[in-house]
Image (tube, rainbow, N blue to C red):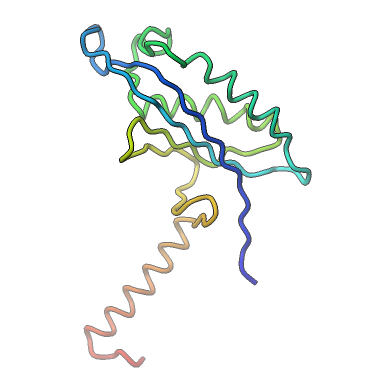
Amino acid sequence: MKNKHEAYSYRITFNAMHNLVLNDPRKMHAHTFRVGMYVIEKQDEHPVFLNTEKMLQEYFEEYRGIRINELELFREVLPTLENMGEIFYWDLKPLFEKNGMQLVYLEIGDGPTSSFYIGEALLLGDVSNMVEEKKVEAYCSGVRKRYQRRLSGRENE
């Protein structure tokens, strides 16, 4: 029987400015930040989506249309994707817990070509096909063994 994976994906976008050079406002630039959160249920009943969506809207309201460097939190910490992602992840984790859900990982990006991921376990693929790192390693180990047999002329073993 094939393992079944179920998860929910929430996405939020917000427009904001940030500066990666502290104390130089001339370097301020704008982005449409996108944040994806991948969660699993920790209960038998399905979560109330309106509660979760409302919670996310309220949380990210603080970041909409502002200069992120002006927030107290980012006066001494650069608002890089990595730093923002870590703060969002650890802030949102207990909020999802209150809704009976576990935040598996969070993705944040500010452009079309790359994202930063943070979570407790590396997951490869998308929500519909989550693969744990140890399963990927087991597969790769098998491929390496077959390749070594082929190189040594023992392909049929």
